[in-house]
Image (cartoon, rainbow, N blue to C red; front, side):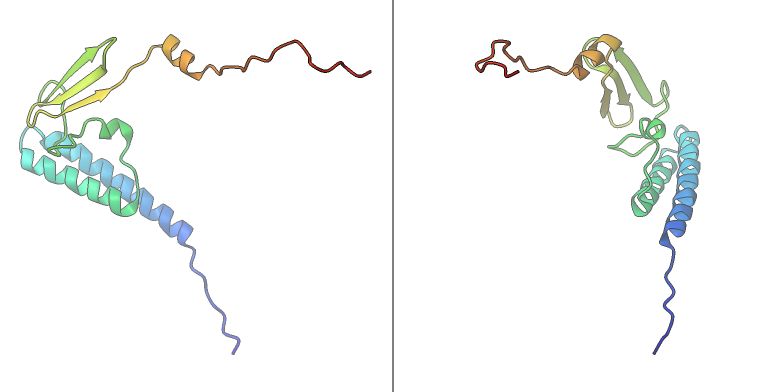
Length: 136
């Protein structure tokens, strides 16, 4: 019989879930940074919770924060305290080493001239001699 079907608007709900999830991820990662030197197990727990929220809600952890998380042992990295950072100009770029587990992260660094060379397109060579005469 002519019953009206109500459709839910999942777009708004998804956006609200994403904003709450990103706020919680930021809070957890900031707490993990604070607790990294005091209590490593608590810092690992905060990072694990942030990753779990990120996976369930399909919200990415910001690149600036993700760069300072150890993938192997799951601790928040603090440069100079529990992580060593080195700059290798021509070889590998920036190298961050976790001092608790020894894992290494490498971030390549390219100069301005090198990055331009990669984006230059090569034009095909076409011979100027024409096999067929031009029609007027």
